[in-house]
Length: 197
Image (cartoon, rainbow, N blue to C red; front, side):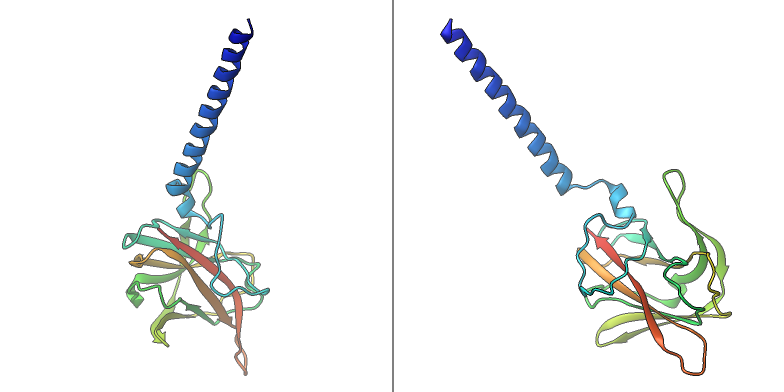
């Protein structure tokens, strides 16, 4: 009788160990190949290149997170992030973001946010002039709307249709806006942390 009980105990321990091993393997594989859905929204875990108490996270939508893949970005500026009227937007990219960006790949629009059943999309194109340049080997984009963007409860987005960088990693893009006035001053409104895998 004690031998049968000992065998049952060993079978329970073996079964528990096998269950734990299967769960661990599943979680490890899940972490190595995260679902594609996560790449289309803000990252659950973020690393920031410029850690700062004043850091503000901005929402973005990214159609593909693969290296060198063709991707559409919606870099969204919500009403909460826009404290003033805007006559200039500047986006600074990190040095490692080696994607080629040209002005004909950019547009500014009023945006409709996506959800579980719908995609983020442009509602209305906002006429604007774009400038793409480099400063200390870092790319920047400057956007000059034809009319001042009002301070309202609408959401706006800078839309980019580009090929993703060739290197994987997290890329922090910082956004600055300038209000109209005699002494224009740029203000930081937030950052998008883009994930490339």
